[in-house]
Length: 310
Image (cartoon, rainbow, N blue to C red; front, side, top):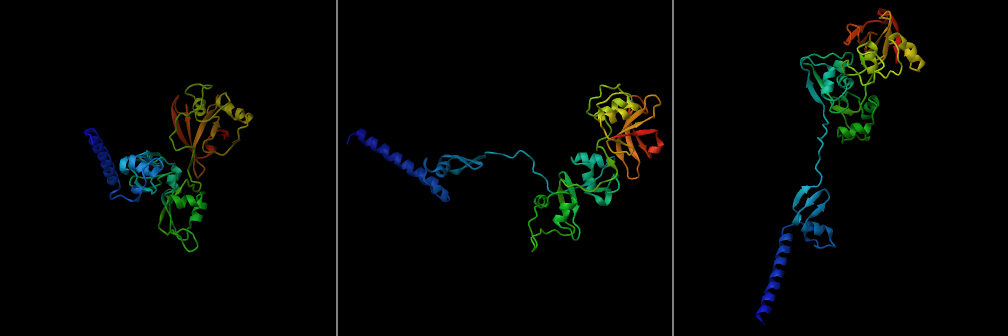
């Protein structure tokens, strides 16, 4: 055998030895998947031996996890309410805005404190729902179906959001008096006072270029869609001609039309209606030109009312 032949044989033997050693190092001490045939006809084996993707995970050689293919970017949703202590100067509306819920949702979640009032004081402790919805304290004889009907949601939504798993012999889910549940997207009873918005009086998003800057008409037309024109006293007839409903009872979001200015009339926006029939309006050019103010009107008998545009 020539020197070249011996050299060639040594090279072949070395290649075979390295291959066998590599194969042994892959399979040694690994689970059954590691012994799968490696090759293009065996995808699992190929991925495990040479790297690749398996589900949502990217694999390196010999099954080493390199990185997840998809990484969650959203914060996990909280499923339990927050017990919040009211700070000095805060009201229901500020707290609701802080937690990205509505004032009614905060009030429905604290029926012992806020069913008949929207007033809170520093040091009060309130339950805040983690999502749009209602926090409910389970009482005797409550059932998931009854709660779902009361808060106008699907029963399964309550079950899923609160991770309820235990069932009674009749298949109903187990809840006990004193349990605290979150009813996502729940809606409770009508509350007083009723408000048009949780926000403080402000210029609205509607075009009001048909009216004179700083006047009552200019302000109200920014808060409501007003397709007509004219002085304040003309709004009553102009709105009716365009098919807008009208009446003599204040409603949140309605336009109040009065003769409070002898020549031009006056319009204001109804912000809030109270249980006793009183209501709060916001307006401009009542106390001063280009100034937004609010008034509590105890009765429509206090003012020269023309009516309300709904």
